[in-house]
Structure formats: structure tokens, C-alpha cells
Length: 403
Image 1 (cartoon, one colour):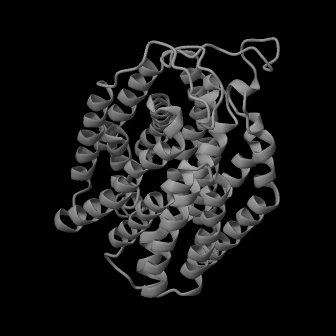
Image 2: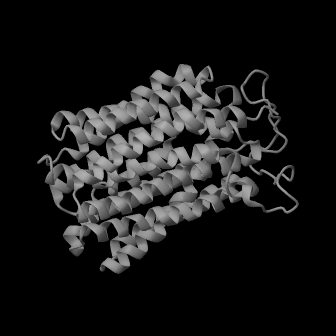
């Protein structure tokens, strides 16, 4: 959790201000900003399936450390990027270790959790993301307004990522099989040590490497559903600062907005812990998607302080129910040595949505307006909600593994 907090703190420290940095430092237009920022998500997306394969095939601790080191070292590239082209190259390449690291870290977290507490534990593990989202944008915006110095933020992100690397190096992995207790919700025996998951040939075709080594095919509908949620958050998180300034005339409120989102996330994780412990994943997911729909509608229908801050709280409550529920759902559809693949599948779909959101959000706002872009977001969220109730619930109930 501490390492994951460092990872996402470094990430969110830069995310809300990068559009402003590109505009002020390189005079980039809105559509160019969208293209530059979408490159990070694209390479993260491309790295996800391979990282899932690596995590499920090789010692997970070693994969984790390599990924974290690469994620850490790329922050130094921002300090030396003197042109828009060079910055674009660094930002785009940085997405690959980020995509691999989030898979490796979350898979290791699942491994060290006792199976009887896994549903609840994943929910608590996600609190580290939420705390980072609460603090990092607030710290970044405060420091930027105080110093007007982006280089300071890049140095801070580099240092914090380095601390996360040191913390993860202290993880102790288990080197013996651990049986799963009956009634835990996952009856599959542990046949291999957690640190080295061997490839599974059963139902994978003849070859050692097949498509479902990179993507959990049983979870494709869950992945499609998550893509819509990622699309919405991609537009909102990347264009929030500019939208609030140009449309709502709210300056300096971005940090407060992210703080409220995170408080909602934390509250929903704590409130939903009991339901997760009892295995009520579908109920949690349903509550999350409905609340998130209200959040995006409020944001676009009420372009004022009430809609702005109210949507932040609702979005936090909604996503706090959605994420742990969806992650546990897709893990329940995977075998032990498919956990990395399951994690990467969910994150792949989120990345696709984020990338499309950043790209289309920039294009729509450039050629139409920011208001049109956020109406697009509200409609996409409603469509994602419809997909959940019409298809995702049934797909999950049919695909869950009990052996």
C-alpha cells in the first residue's frame, strides 16, 4: 500500500497540471495537448498484456522491481525535455513502465492477501490510490501557485517514485504453497509458490503462449464495461482545470475537486468493505455505476460551484464502489496463475477508455466546446451503466470459477 501510494502520488502530482504546462511552456493547442497526453496511455495500454504475461510467468518480485525502477527513472526525462517533441517522446515512453508496474504491484498485493480476506483487502489496498489522488493534486497546485515552477514538481515526483521503489524492495514473498480455506469464495488450490507462477496449459491450447496469456477472454464484457468508465474519467481528469477556468470561472479549485473525489472514494471503500467481505460484488458495482452516472450528469447540467464540487463527491462515492467490485469480479474469473492477466485485462480496458477520452476530449473541445465534450462524457457513462445491467452481471455469474 505504501509503495502503491508513492506510485500514484508521483503520477497524480503531474497529471492535473500537464495540460497547463504544455500550453504555457510550448504554446500547444488543445488538440495537440490531447495527442501528447494520450501517448502515455497508449504505451501503458500496449504494456499491460505483456506485463500480465510476465507477472504470471516469471518471479513476480523481480518483475515488480524492474518495472518500478523504469517508472522511477523516466521522471528524470521531464527535467531535460527542452522541446515539445522531446517531451512527447519521454511522456509517451513513460507510459510503458507505468502500465506494467500497476499490474505487477496489484498482483503482488493479491498474492500476499489471505484468500478469505481478499475481496475486502483489495478494497483497502485501493485506499492508497485514493489517498494519493486526494493529496497529490492539492500539493501540486499549491506548489505551482507558490513557486510557478514545474521543474520542482518533476523533481518531487522523481524523489517520491524512488521512495516507492525502496519500499517495494522490502516485500517478503512466500516461497511455499498456501492452501485456500474452505468457504473463502475461491476454492482453487495453490499449486505453485506465489513468487513464480508457472504457465497453465489446461484450456490454453497446445502452445505455451496463447491469446489468453495476454488477455482474460472470460472477462471481455467486464473489460468492455470498464472501458466506458475509463473514457469518462479520462476526459474529466485531464481537462478539468482548463474547463473550470474557462467555463465555470473557477480558478484554484482543481485541488479541492480532487480532494473531494478522494474523500468520496475513501468513504465508499470503508462503507462497502462489509459488502465486499460478504461477496456482494454485483451489488457494489451496481451502486457504483448508478452513483457515477448522477455525478457526470450533475457536472454538465450544473456548471457552477454546486455542480462542480457536488459531482466530485458523487464521483468518488461511485468509483469507490466500482473499482474493487470489478477487480474482484475479474479475479474470481481467473485461476491463480492468471491473476496478472486478469489485472492487466481490467487495466487495459481502463487505459483504452482513458486514452480515447484524452484524445476525443481534446478534439471535441477544440472543434466544438468543452461543454460538448462533457455532454459526451455523461452519455458515455449512461451507456456504460446500461451495459452493466444488461450484460455484465450475467457474464460475471456465468464466468466465475469455483474449481
